Length: 172
Image (cartoon, rainbow, N blue to C red; front, side, top):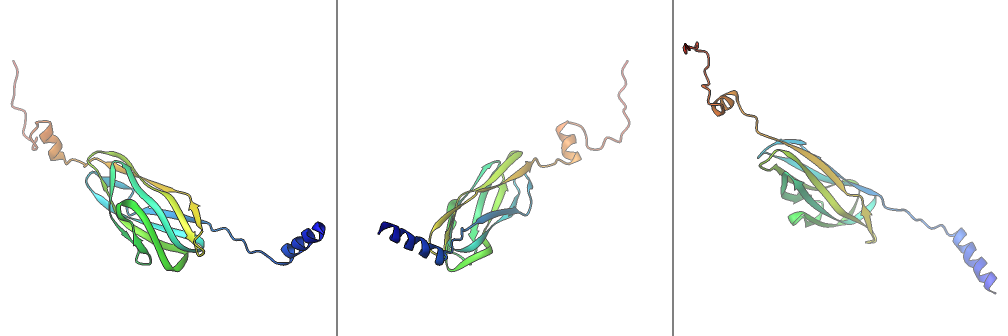
């Protein structure tokens, strides 16, 4: 009797195809410039890509080093927000393929060096509201000192900016 049940279940499993697709996705991070001068800023975009329809996404956007993030604005295709870098978005018209997530501003702080934008804790929810973890993304930004003009360099060295006069000092 147990053999008949097992054979029946096995045959049903073979005859009825199960459609099992795994959602795959990624996040992309791009900035207008990857090199900034101290106290300047640029705009960056966060976008996503999914092999299957997604109904929601969440991620944490942060900065480290010599940059800071501000003015986070989520795309109008989503509902929810991205305040303080905590992005929690959902939609009633599921998204697949490439889609916009948010734009934001990064500013180079007061010292030269590097800074990193990190997107972590990324989860996509499929059309059935099952969560799928997506790999994080990071982008390094180079911060340069403000270049000084020749006049500023001369002033700092206590030299006159017009050094075309002949030297009239004589030593004996």
